[in-house]
Image (cartoon, rainbow, N blue to C red):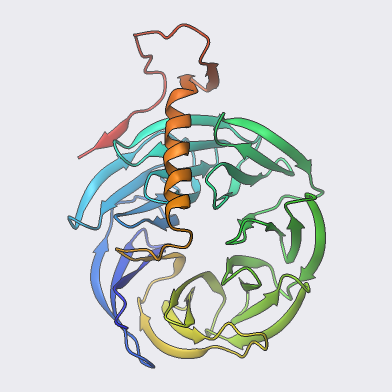
Length: 360
């Protein structure tokens, strides 16, 4: 199967790279497609949907790229401070978190900020959307893990943790999630909201990715990628991936195997083949490309995403869109965020206290 995909990577040098991948059974090649210097500071986050790629930066902006038209699509100027995390929910919504403690929900139809939540007293360091689209998790520098009900924009649950967590991720099935603090991974069960296992990495962790509901790829401040069985809370295999620390990992399923993508400070993006069977074996290198830049983040863009649950996912996405637009309005006055109830009378005049969305 010849998959159509593109590797998108951000760098300390403020540049976003795009590489078009030509796939084969055992050999993948990545050729430069574009480089873009839209930011004025290092690129801190990147995310991709079927049509759009977004990048966040220390320059406080989120840059939009329309991959269908192959053009810039403007910038989102709502946050103050570094954009720390970006995540799409399907094709309809983008969630962003930043140094200002805000968690924002954007509609990708008109790129309007539909909901602004003051999520943490400190920085929002990471966020993750539940596969249903109804819940989101966030962690921040206020030493809390927060669960958000995206239907009403309210905090559903707050858990105090002893240290500042910097990564949180839902599993693909949404029945568990992981929280990363420095070199430690806590594995939580959604049903009980309690830790079912903890695993320690030799170095501080920089990126994690669920390959499926059982296996988690973990990268940190060394050249090795390790694989964890989250049900057993133990390491099952590891592989030297780069010459220096691995900054970011991503993955996608192609036919009957998984492709792991790694990006490093050494400038290389590498593509690895791994079969997700019970006895996990180290991945085999499919191909690599040298960007000659110090990479910070990585995402894979595919024009057509594989459908996991068919109509049910579309239904939840549509439900989320309806609920977000009908059940509340958000008004921002300087730094104060007010989530208004639908029962209050609507004001026709809109205040422009916050920054605007810029479109091209």
